[in-house]
Amino acid sequence: MATTTPVNPYLTYNFLVKWDGNPVAAVSHVSGLTRKTQVVSFHAGGQPQSAFKIPGQTDYEPVHLSRGITTDTTFEEWASLMWTYPNTQQLGNEMNMARFRKPMQIELYNQAGVIVLRYNLYNCWPSEYTALPDLDSEANAVALASMTIEHEGWDRDTTVTAPAQPGY
Image 1 (spheres, helix red, strand yellow):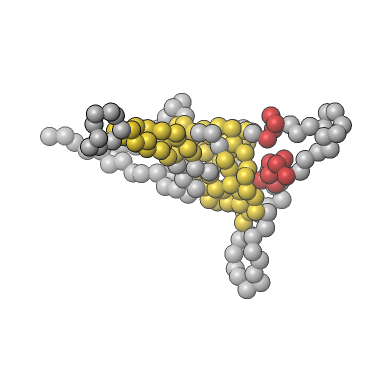
Image 2 (tube, one colour):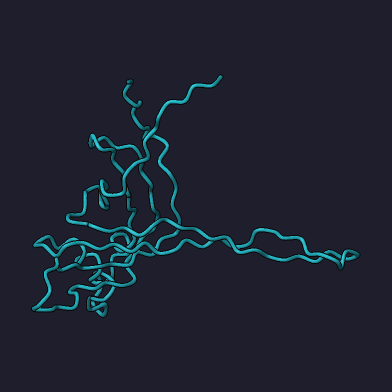
């Protein structure tokens, strides 16, 4: 007879978003990581009854971030790289593409505050930025800025391993 050890799933509230190697302050919501592979139907000669289904192009859905508005300008600085073009008529004022696209990490922590999971996102850049939400003098809510991040794929960082569950 097999014995089972209880394993609790991780909770969604204990996470960090990082870029430039630093945590991004006050992020309160991160959308899920999703990839979709198109299905291509292929009809072979001599077999008209049914099509073969083969994988096509894989697309990665954008990641949506929300965070409380603070004095930290990390969101705004990155978003401004896209919409604030310098005067490029002078040499040396071209847009710095090395700063525009950057890697991003999403880390999940257990209830003890120990990292258990990290995903690396590649060639990220902000495609949408909301600096200020709708304001309402009758509401009792935190003001949230939001950003949509486009990227060229993600993978699980296998160097991060979850600690062993405590014995009972």
